[in-house]
Image (tube, rainbow, N blue to C red; front, side, top):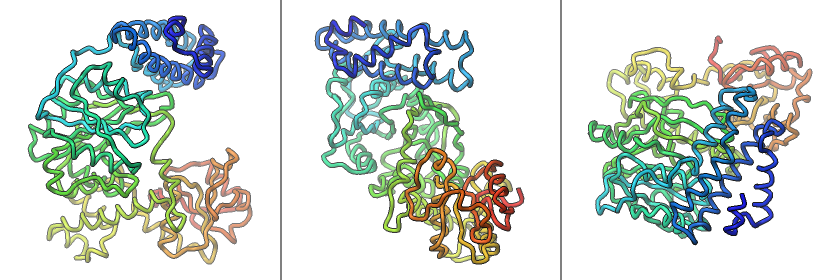
Amino acid sequence: MNLLRLHDCARSEEDQAIVARLQSMFGQWNSFAFPEVLQAYRDFDFLLKRSFLTFCRTMPAEQAYRSLHEIWIGATQDLLGFYAERRLLNMARDFERLRDLIELSFFFESRLLNRSASSASPAPAISVILPVYRAQQFLWEALRSLYEQTFQDFEIILVNECGNDDPLEEILAIFGDTRTRIVQKTARARLGMSLNLGIRHARGEFIARMDADDIALPGRFAAQADFLRAHPDITLCGTQYRSFGTANNWSDKPYPLTHPEIQCRSLKYCCFLHPTVMWRRRELIEHGLWYNEEVLAEDTDLFARTVYTLQTANLPETLLLYRREGHNLSIANLKHKDGKQRSLAVVQSMELERNNLKRLYRTLSEEELDLVARKAEDDFAYGDALRIYRHRLGREDLSDLLPPDTSEAMGALSVNLNGRIPVIWGYGWNGQVLEYLLQEQGYREYRIVDQRLQALNGALDSPHAMKLEQLDGRSDAYYVLISMDKHFPDVTERLESFGYREHKDYLEFFLRRGK
């Protein structure tokens, strides 16, 4: 730690507090909550990265790196063993989070780069599009993972977002790799504009996406480039991934591999992890498949249009480590509202689903048109789409790809409502989709409750909010629609304690009927 001060690092009160906090934990980590320990080391990791830039002003980068590597190893060498020996970690995922924190840190490796810096090619095979905005805390790992790819014929286009204060030039100078170009964006806008700007500057046969906080495994580019060259009918491919990070409590569900399955699942969901995809630049441009700069979920929108135009695939291999650090953009996007105070992300998602149904309808064969009784395009509904994909995939059960049709649930609501006010239980994504569906069906008077938010003493951002207790004994006035897509006994038990009976007074809206 004294080495940091010697080189004029860790001088600010904030940095001194980080060092003091870490030193207070040495050898007695069990005296602190596990999330506190993770955060203390995450803060220290960032302090070392900022110090690296200072060190490099007075000594060679490799020498500076070795010094900081020794500090990081010294600070973490007993940490994992301490928790393991005392069996202090309750879940396997906690052990994984701690191991990743230590071993995926920038300064864990013994060398700055395990591959010599390469020079730029006038016509690289791959152009990597990487937008950057205040990302220097994790950009180091992302860049190194690219420079250490086994496939080296690529360029990196850093799209520098307007207002970004990351020291990009200093960071790139330390790596000394001339394949990286900075493209400056001059106005703040949604991510789609940044990505389109990067594509316009790309020279590669293939475009690869990468985010500034993720880690590409060494064989990623080789596997995807080899796959696309071996399958000229495929235009876009993604890969599987593994989540990591101090706030990682997410499950990593595999993406479907084949184009028919991907196209099926794309009716409702995004079928690619954005920073894993690679595509043929010319083909997407020729088909006008640019990012939509007006929508919040630019990746889901682009991929949905692509799967109904060109052939796609996902590789079965895990080729990217996807960082989870507590902030989820999809959840943040729910807070954006339209003129009717509905979630803009939900409104755009529902519009995309309607467009997907139209795209699917235009691909129907004569035999498939017979399957849906020759319905017109405007009458083609989600239930009809499920029938088509059961036929195309040759199986009845699509539950691993798509949720059930909710038209029956909407019918059950209309039968049982009997003049009562509908109440949405749970205001996450499904709850806001349900709000949209109610409004589309003409319901203007409805209420919303959220058990989890109320337990945290939070308040719903909606004029329709009510307290759970107001439901007690009022099944004559309210009909409850549970928005979760899994059965939670504590929810139904609480409603039944309030005097509500299943179907007659409440409905688990997104569950398959009969289960």
